[in-house]
Length: 450
Image 1 (cartoon, rainbow, N blue to C red):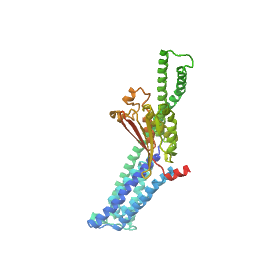
Image 2: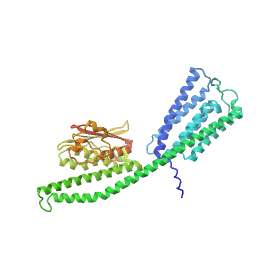
Image 3: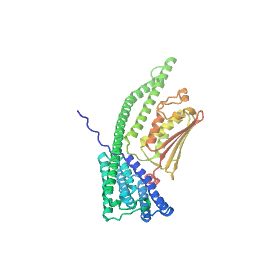
Image 4: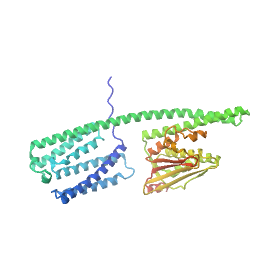
């Protein structure tokens, strides 16, 4: 039985946004290049060109690119708006390319190659049939332009100083040859690029499905383990505290070891759940919402404060102010709880943990730093600190319970929120972990807080 053909995958919203940003950057280069080269050719080396038309085209390209850039920077744009804006860019570019080709020799213009480049860019977003159609459309546009110039309906602009003069645009054989090579090149490029892009999307979909299955298994398995481990630990603590009978010294040692192992197993389960959640979020790409970061940070500090109080560790919290980021409450809670818990865990009794939060509003970032006075990390091991299951050698020697998964989960979640995380540490002097997240428009934060 023949396997069904894989479904055609549409590009994700992130792919569309990246392509739109790429087109905007390339358009700045194109508009400024037309402006600069026209000025140099016409007034620098005295080449006869339709300078007025080319300069007007350059200004038009730079003008609509400025408007498109402002549109692309608008927050909360629906996916449908992003798609329409992208195809609007393509349409405007094709009009600009028609004008450029006409002003630089028509069917004889070397600028025809830009149509092929644009077809290749669009083919990364289109299914195979659409890419072929776009290549044919480009051929029809060029053929129509050639026909209009050959018939005299549109004046042909000759550039004798560049060797683009004579009546070549009126001669059938050269025009047909140019159209043949242009159309075959455009179709070949569209076919190759569209097939490669579709293959990459299919491969990415299979990898995403495998990662989702793995995350689902980890989550289900750890959920099933959490309840019996918590129950067993509660029973062990009851025995340890003498609720049944007084323990002999040897029994107390055994019960203490069992409790320590169960504590370690509980932490491993919690970290595995966090890690599975971070991977699942990165793969599934859930819709991010506007979240008050200060509230999530304050909640995390209060959750971890009893652990610090029990060991006489001072936790200094930053002042609260509305700071909106695009994230999830649960994800931010996991990030901050993990970092603060680590800082408390690896700080000696009577130490200090300081949490700072600062907004760089003009740059559009918010920085959260968690500083401790703990055991620190050896310099040689710092490059591996975000690796899965890695624990510093001095942490292992200290016999402090840990899994080495927490920071890997935190980094995955921070990157999912388009942020960065760095860690600075010196052995015996403490550790500072810094997280930077994109800050949303503060006017929205004021509305939410009001």
